[in-house]
Length: 435
Ligand SMILES: Cc1ncc(COP(=O)(O)O)c(C=O)c1O
Image 1 (cartoon, rainbow, N blue to C red):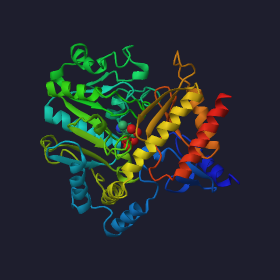
Image 2: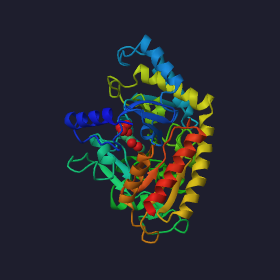
Image 3: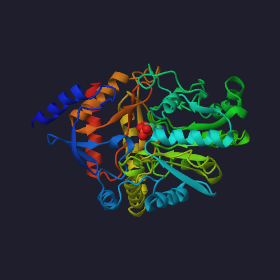
Image 4: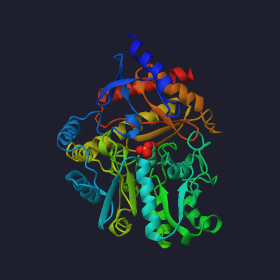
C-alpha cells in the first residue's frame, strides 16, 4: 500500500488551509458507502464516527443519492423567499407530525446546527419579550458568536474569540458520574433539576428568562445522559415560570438514540426542537420545529436566509425520513444499541480504564479514567486509543471536556460483520493501550 496521494494532499492542505478547522484523523477520503469510508490510496475504514453523527442512514444511501440527483435535475436553488418549492413545505409538514406534542406545530429551515440554535433563540426572545437564555456546563451548540457563547468548553471553542454574546447564563448539567453538586443518584432526588429555582435567585430572574436550551444527551460534552426524572422536573419548572424549553437535538435527533427524538426517552414535550446533522443524510440542512403560536410570531422577513432549506437538502431529508421509517432503521438502531451496550459493559469488566458506560440506543459513550476511585480523566489515553484504532482501520471519535470519552456514531446500516470487526479492533486497541 502506498500513501502517495494522501501525503500529497496532506502537504497541500497544510499549505492552503488554516489549522483552525481541525482534523481528527489524517485521512483524505475519496468515497464512502454504508459504514465504510475509503481513502485516496484505497485504504478502507470502518466508520464509527458517521461524519460526527450525520450519516445515520449510511454514506451515500442509494435512495438519498437518487433524491439528490432527481432534485438537482429539476431545481437546485430558487431561494425560498423568492420562489417556494414542494420539498421545503412537504418536509416541514412531516417534521411537524414527527415532533413530540399533541398540538399544532411549524417548522423553518436553516443550513447548520448552529443556525438552527440561533433561530430558536431569536424566536424565543421575540415570543417572550425576555432577553435571557439559560444553557449548561459541558454543552455544545455551535461556533457562531451566539452559539459559541452558549457552548461551555473554553478550549478550543472560545479562547480568544470573545467578547461573547450577552444575556447567556450557564447552570450545571446532570452529569451523574461527576456530579457537579457532589451528590449521588438516586439519593440526590435530582437536585440538579430543582437547582433551576435557586438559579433564578442567584443568577438571573425567571421573569427575564426567555428559554432554557439543553441537549437531551450532551454530544460534544461527553455523551452525558441525564437521569429519568431530570427532564420532567426541568420542564415543569420552566412551565411554571413561562420559560420556553428548547431541546437541541442536533446530535441526538434523527433516530440516533433509537427514537426519532432523544427527548422521547424522557416523555417530555419541548416547546421547540432544533435538529440538523443526520436530518438530510449529509446535505447541509437544519430545522427548528415548535409550537405554532411561537414559531409564527416573528414578523415577515425576520427569519430565513439565502440557502436556508435548499431544495436539494430538503429532498435528501425526505428520503432520509422514508429510509428511517420504511426500512425500519429505528429498530435497527435499537438493536445496535443493545449489542453495543452488552459489549461495552463486558469491556468495562475487563478494562479498569473504562470508568463509565452511558447513553441511549447506539449513542453510547465510554468515559476513560486513570483510576476508578479518583476518576482522573484518561485524556492522553483516549487520544492514543483512537489513534490505535485508526491504524487498524477503525475511525472512532472522542469527546468530553477532557477529551476522555469514546463515542459511537456509526451508521445504522452497518452490517453485523462490520460492527463486530470494529468492536474487535476497539478491544484489541484497548488491550494494547493498557498492557
Ligand atoms: C448539540 C449540537 N448543537 C449544535 C451543533 C452545531 O452544529 P453545526 O456544526 O452544524 O453548526 C452541534 C454540532 O456538533 C451539536 O452537537
